[in-house]
Image (cartoon, rainbow, N blue to C red):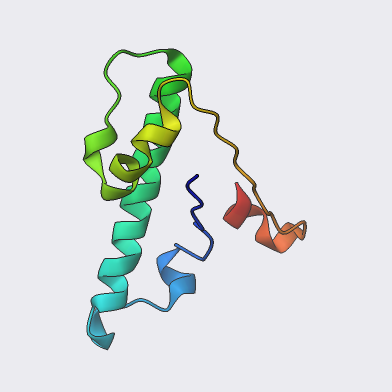
Length: 91
C-alpha cells in the first residue's frame, strides 16, 4: 500500500518561491511540477495501453511503478475547492 500526499500549491506565484530568496523553494516547486507532469504522462500512457511507459523519468513514478502498472488497483482521491476563484488551481 502506497499513500502519497500531492497537495499544495505548485504555482510559482502562490508558493512564494523566487530566485531572490535563495532559490531553494523555487527549485523544490519546479521539481514538484516536473514530477506531477511525469505522473500525468505515465497515467495517460497506461490508459492508452502503450507498451513504453516512462516510469524512470522521475523518482515519484519510479517509486509508484509497482502500484500504477501491472494488475494493481489505483485509487485517487481529489479534493478541489468549489469556489470560482480557485477554478484555475483545480483545473
